[in-house]
Image (cartoon, rainbow, N blue to C red; front, side):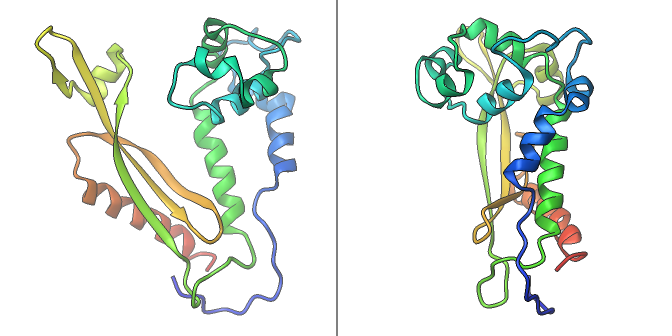
Length: 200
Protein backbone atom coordinates (compact mmCIF):
# COMPACT_ATOMS: atom_id res chain seq x y z
CA UNK A 1 0.00 0.00 0.00
CA UNK A 2 1.31 3.39 -0.97
CA UNK A 3 2.04 6.08 1.60
CA UNK A 4 0.23 9.31 0.72
CA UNK A 5 1.11 11.26 3.86
CA UNK A 6 4.43 12.49 5.20
CA UNK A 7 5.24 11.35 8.71
CA UNK A 8 8.24 12.82 10.46
CA UNK A 9 7.93 11.09 13.81
CA UNK A 10 8.45 7.40 14.43
CA UNK A 11 6.55 5.58 17.12
CA UNK A 12 6.53 1.85 17.77
CA UNK A 13 3.46 -0.33 18.27
CA UNK A 14 2.63 -2.11 21.51
CA UNK A 15 5.80 -2.13 23.61
CA UNK A 16 7.13 -5.13 25.53
CA UNK A 17 6.39 -3.23 28.73
CA UNK A 18 2.71 -2.85 27.82
CA UNK A 19 2.45 -6.54 26.96
CA UNK A 20 4.08 -7.44 30.28
CA UNK A 21 1.64 -5.18 32.15
CA UNK A 22 -1.31 -6.70 30.28
CA UNK A 23 -0.21 -10.27 31.06
CA UNK A 24 0.39 -9.55 34.74
CA UNK A 25 -2.72 -7.44 35.31
CA UNK A 26 -5.00 -9.20 37.87
CA UNK A 27 -8.02 -8.19 35.75
CA UNK A 28 -6.51 -9.95 32.73
CA UNK A 29 -5.89 -13.11 34.74
CA UNK A 30 -9.39 -13.06 36.25
CA UNK A 31 -11.05 -12.49 32.85
CA UNK A 32 -9.21 -15.13 30.82
CA UNK A 33 -8.98 -18.03 33.26
CA UNK A 34 -11.62 -20.72 32.80
CA UNK A 35 -12.33 -21.29 36.47
CA UNK A 36 -12.48 -18.74 39.27
CA UNK A 37 -9.97 -20.79 41.29
CA UNK A 38 -7.46 -21.18 38.45
CA UNK A 39 -4.13 -19.33 38.81
CA UNK A 40 -5.05 -18.10 42.31
CA UNK A 41 -2.16 -19.64 44.23
CA UNK A 42 1.47 -18.59 43.93
CA UNK A 43 3.25 -21.34 42.03
CA UNK A 44 5.62 -21.83 39.11
CA UNK A 45 2.86 -22.12 36.48
CA UNK A 46 1.32 -18.67 36.62
CA UNK A 47 -0.85 -17.49 33.72
CA UNK A 48 1.80 -15.08 32.35
CA UNK A 49 4.51 -17.76 32.46
CA UNK A 50 2.27 -20.34 30.78
CA UNK A 51 1.38 -17.87 28.01
CA UNK A 52 5.00 -16.90 27.38
CA UNK A 53 5.98 -20.58 27.40
CA UNK A 54 3.32 -21.36 24.78
CA UNK A 55 4.83 -18.71 22.52
CA UNK A 56 8.21 -20.47 22.83
CA UNK A 57 6.97 -24.02 22.24
CA UNK A 58 8.34 -25.88 19.26
CA UNK A 59 6.65 -28.69 17.34
CA UNK A 60 8.15 -31.38 19.57
CA UNK A 61 6.33 -32.71 22.64
CA UNK A 62 5.81 -30.58 25.74
CA UNK A 63 8.17 -32.84 27.70
CA UNK A 64 10.92 -32.28 25.12
CA UNK A 65 10.52 -28.50 25.34
CA UNK A 66 10.59 -28.55 29.14
CA UNK A 67 13.93 -30.38 29.32
CA UNK A 68 15.99 -27.30 28.49
CA UNK A 69 16.17 -24.15 26.42
CA UNK A 70 13.93 -21.10 26.87
CA UNK A 71 11.07 -22.90 28.64
CA UNK A 72 13.30 -24.02 31.49
CA UNK A 73 14.50 -20.44 32.00
CA UNK A 74 10.98 -19.00 31.80
CA UNK A 75 9.48 -21.42 34.34
CA UNK A 76 12.54 -21.30 36.65
CA UNK A 77 11.50 -24.48 38.50
CA UNK A 78 11.02 -27.93 36.92
CA UNK A 79 7.45 -28.94 35.98
CA UNK A 80 6.08 -32.03 34.28
CA UNK A 81 4.53 -32.05 30.83
CA UNK A 82 1.22 -33.14 32.37
CA UNK A 83 1.19 -30.20 34.80
CA UNK A 84 1.99 -27.76 32.00
CA UNK A 85 -0.77 -29.17 29.77
CA UNK A 86 -3.31 -28.88 32.60
CA UNK A 87 -2.30 -25.26 33.25
CA UNK A 88 -2.49 -24.48 29.52
CA UNK A 89 -6.06 -25.80 29.38
CA UNK A 90 -7.11 -23.36 32.11
CA UNK A 91 -6.69 -20.36 29.77
CA UNK A 92 -9.63 -19.30 27.62
CA UNK A 93 -8.92 -19.44 23.90
CA UNK A 94 -10.21 -15.87 23.51
CA UNK A 95 -7.10 -14.65 25.30
CA UNK A 96 -4.90 -15.30 22.28
CA UNK A 97 -7.23 -13.69 19.74
CA UNK A 98 -7.64 -10.65 22.00
CA UNK A 99 -3.87 -10.37 22.44
CA UNK A 100 -3.42 -10.50 18.65
CA UNK A 101 -6.02 -7.73 18.30
CA UNK A 102 -4.16 -5.62 20.85
CA UNK A 103 -0.86 -6.10 19.01
CA UNK A 104 -2.44 -5.31 15.65
CA UNK A 105 -4.02 -2.13 17.02
CA UNK A 106 -0.57 -1.04 18.17
CA UNK A 107 0.85 -1.70 14.73
CA UNK A 108 -1.95 0.18 12.96
CA UNK A 109 -1.39 3.24 15.14
CA UNK A 110 2.35 3.43 14.44
CA UNK A 111 2.87 6.94 13.13
CA UNK A 112 5.58 5.94 10.67
CA UNK A 113 5.99 2.45 9.29
CA UNK A 114 9.10 1.29 7.44
CA UNK A 115 8.45 1.02 3.71
CA UNK A 116 10.02 0.01 0.42
CA UNK A 117 9.58 2.80 -2.15
CA UNK A 118 6.57 4.15 -0.23
CA UNK A 119 4.89 0.74 -0.09
CA UNK A 120 4.35 -1.63 2.82
CA UNK A 121 5.85 -5.04 2.03
CA UNK A 122 3.30 -7.64 3.10
CA UNK A 123 3.73 -11.32 2.34
CA UNK A 124 1.12 -14.03 2.67
CA UNK A 125 1.78 -17.69 3.31
CA UNK A 126 -0.35 -20.77 3.69
CA UNK A 127 0.25 -24.35 4.67
CA UNK A 128 -1.44 -27.47 6.03
CA UNK A 129 -1.34 -28.39 9.70
CA UNK A 130 -2.16 -31.52 11.68
CA UNK A 131 -4.82 -31.16 14.37
CA UNK A 132 -5.21 -33.21 17.55
CA UNK A 133 -7.99 -35.74 17.80
CA UNK A 134 -11.17 -34.62 19.57
CA UNK A 135 -14.90 -34.64 18.98
CA UNK A 136 -15.04 -30.85 18.68
CA UNK A 137 -12.30 -30.82 16.03
CA UNK A 138 -13.97 -33.62 14.08
CA UNK A 139 -17.33 -31.85 14.21
CA UNK A 140 -15.90 -28.57 12.88
CA UNK A 141 -12.95 -29.52 10.65
CA UNK A 142 -14.10 -32.99 9.61
CA UNK A 143 -11.97 -36.07 8.99
CA UNK A 144 -9.16 -35.49 6.48
CA UNK A 145 -8.24 -39.15 5.95
CA UNK A 146 -8.48 -42.61 7.49
CA UNK A 147 -5.60 -45.09 7.30
CA UNK A 148 -5.88 -48.84 6.79
CA UNK A 149 -6.04 -49.36 10.56
CA UNK A 150 -9.06 -47.07 10.85
CA UNK A 151 -7.13 -44.23 12.46
CA UNK A 152 -8.54 -40.83 11.58
CA UNK A 153 -6.39 -37.87 10.63
CA UNK A 154 -7.44 -34.25 11.07
CA UNK A 155 -5.94 -31.41 9.04
CA UNK A 156 -6.53 -27.69 8.61
CA UNK A 157 -5.20 -24.86 6.49
CA UNK A 158 -2.89 -22.35 8.21
CA UNK A 159 -2.51 -18.84 6.87
CA UNK A 160 -0.60 -15.70 7.77
CA UNK A 161 -0.04 -12.14 6.53
CA UNK A 162 3.27 -10.60 7.59
CA UNK A 163 4.74 -7.09 7.26
CA UNK A 164 8.37 -7.83 6.37
CA UNK A 165 9.93 -4.45 7.10
CA UNK A 166 8.13 -3.82 10.38
CA UNK A 167 8.25 -7.41 11.67
CA UNK A 168 4.52 -7.68 12.42
CA UNK A 169 2.04 -10.47 11.83
CA UNK A 170 -1.06 -8.70 10.55
CA UNK A 171 -3.38 -11.70 10.34
CA UNK A 172 -3.26 -15.42 10.97
CA UNK A 173 -5.61 -18.27 11.58
CA UNK A 174 -6.95 -21.70 10.76
CA UNK A 175 -9.46 -22.74 8.13
CA UNK A 176 -11.08 -25.98 7.05
CA UNK A 177 -8.91 -28.06 4.73
CA UNK A 178 -11.69 -28.18 2.12
CA UNK A 179 -11.29 -24.45 1.50
CA UNK A 180 -8.97 -23.37 -1.29
CA UNK A 181 -5.79 -21.50 -0.37
CA UNK A 182 -6.49 -18.67 -2.84
CA UNK A 183 -9.96 -18.10 -1.35
CA UNK A 184 -8.51 -17.93 2.17
CA UNK A 185 -5.77 -15.52 1.10
CA UNK A 186 -8.24 -13.22 -0.67
CA UNK A 187 -10.36 -13.03 2.49
CA UNK A 188 -7.20 -12.26 4.46
CA UNK A 189 -6.19 -9.48 2.04
CA UNK A 190 -9.66 -7.90 2.17
CA UNK A 191 -9.61 -7.99 5.96
CA UNK A 192 -6.24 -6.29 6.45
CA UNK A 193 -6.78 -3.83 3.58
CA UNK A 194 -9.87 -2.43 5.26
CA UNK A 195 -7.99 -1.92 8.52
CA UNK A 196 -4.89 -0.40 6.94
CA UNK A 197 -6.85 2.17 4.92
CA UNK A 198 -7.93 3.87 8.12
CA UNK A 199 -4.34 4.57 9.14
CA UNK A 200 -2.13 4.58 6.04
